[in-house]
Length: 226
Image 1 (cartoon, rainbow, N blue to C red):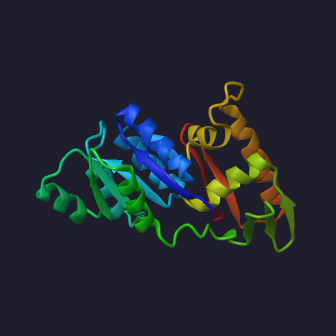
Image 2: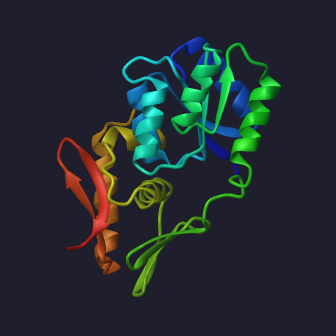
């Protein structure tokens, strides 16, 4: 199972180069270019680790890191920066970073630091996701409850997996579009609602004690039925 990484680097040419290197080394990589996107992805993405550039527009890497740690998120973080002074490194590590790499860097060193940071996390995710009385089998794509089960189609499965990985968190429709449809030119954002409707019907038939709540203009979340 591949390790999932978030790469937040505002220099797009450098970001593309790093992402290409990581993918060749069998990492799964999502790339963003500012701190606000980095924070949103990390809050919703279930990543194994993140590479954060310190100097980013919108929200700098240290602020992203501090917000993650303040929220109890322990995702391993490698800070990437042009700053090499000892006090900058100490500030980054004291803010909750797991490691620190100064630009320019050697690719073997980057890969070695990532291996050290993610050691033990590449065994793969739990084979089943559970919330309330439902479970999702990642191998068979079966959504089950004590009264029965459904084998989900690929996009239904991916959507349900995202919801179960982020219980109680609001996920925007655009996030589903990017992760599942990949901004397919032929796909419109309303397709997300169509698949949510499919899943809601299945949850109802399974007598699930959780449901997908919709907040118009905001997104979707999976939560217990009150």
